Image (cartoon, rainbow, N blue to C red):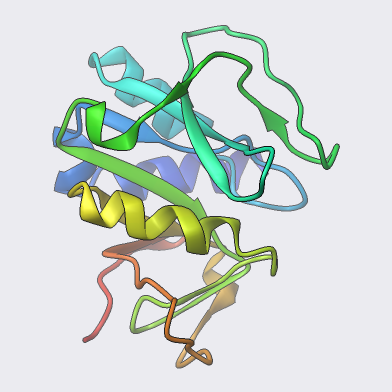
Length: 170
């Protein structure tokens, strides 16, 4: 997995939105997800604010800023580590901003398949409305021609995999 994370971080350097972002939201990788920690570390090193998602009590996700070395705690579902600090309103965070979104699969149009809980489906429209760039993250083997799309699905602006950067065909 370290090799895949390194390849992903290399591919991320080719994405101007990430190089220019003043806020980068990522995730704590688990269950075979690609690790975005090296991307977050590089963004933090150049002065960007770093945020991670956590489950809201009523469902969905919220973002919380995370300092370097800050401990994470198991979330309510127990399988994902989450920040413990106060929630941040996405529109109040420094822009330009980028969110790295894990995906089980992504298609060439930029539509993603998540784990089925709909948490990111509720968060992404808020981020899009606040002007954030949405970057889907998945293993290269999980890219496909087309996924089923529902009316609430928000396409990503770019796709990062362990084999490179892809821009969705629209």
